[in-house]
Image (tube, rainbow, N blue to C red; front, side, top):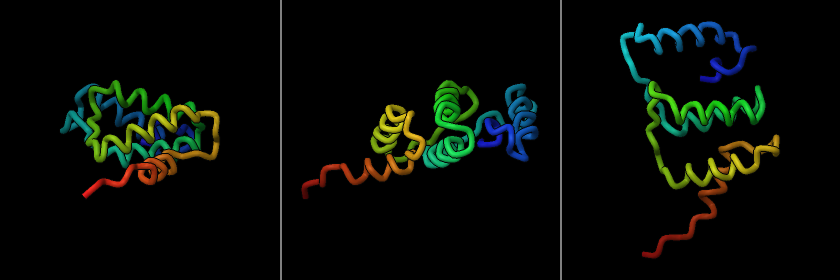
Length: 112
C-alpha cells in the first residue's frame, strides 16, 4: 500500500501496475481486504516518507474505494484516533499509533 503513494519506493512501479490490473478486473480476485490496523501502519509510514497530506489523501481515497474493504477492529478507538490525527495534520511527529494509544488510555473504565 505504501508503494502506491511513495514514488521513491522500489516497488512503486509494480504497485501501480497491480492497482491498474485490479481496477480492470485482470486479477483472480476483485476485492482486497485489510484491517484498520494495517491502514494505521500504512498511514504512519506514509507520513514519515511522504508527509501528512499524502497520508490523509490516501486514507480519504481508501474510504471511497470500491476495491478495498476495511475490516474494522475496535471501530470507536479507530474513529477517535483518525479524528485526532486529522485535526493535528500540522504536527510532523504525531502518528496514528500514538493517537490510538492515547484513545485507549482516555477510555473510561467500565463498571463491573
